[in-house]
Image 1 (tube, rainbow, N blue to C red):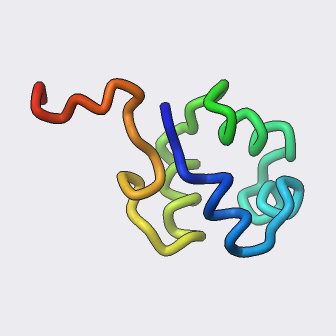
Image 2: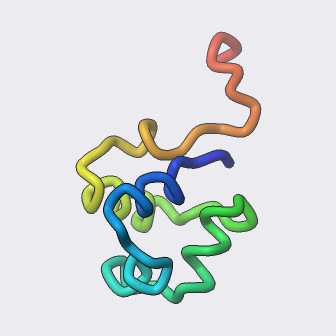
Length: 70
């Protein structure tokens, strides 16, 4: 799953550890999210969206990104 997490975090001058603290997850989890090795649970995705004031869809995108097939 592609996401804009790294860019959003950098725009707010947050470290991975700092973002992890705000989300109650480890720095390693933030790194795994940013690199696409880990997809967030739905509750975590909502928490991230609320933190950045965006919708989940504005942050996370399906890797296929083939919405016309839906």
